[in-house]
Length: 105
Image (cartoon, rainbow, N blue to C red):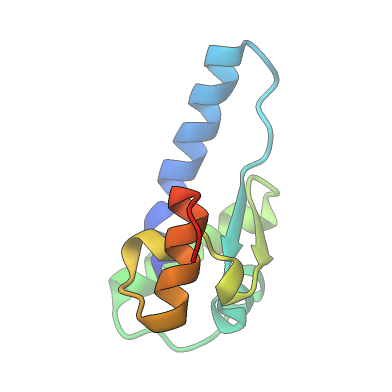
């Protein structure tokens, strides 16, 4: 559940951008490709393996309920960051390479 790892970072980044651009802070938008994770952090419930995971899930749930962050679903193929953190093979690798490096397949 990588979503739980990055919520604090996303909020800090939004504050930094608002400070640097001298503009009003926008509500951070977090994309997630797992509908079950989205349900857990927007409606609560679910089974967590550890107390730490439950605490982190509740922190995200609280942020969503207080309208401090927004979590939206994106298909796995639309997750650009996955290309940089997961190993790809075959056609997926060629598509990713052409998109990132702007070269032909």
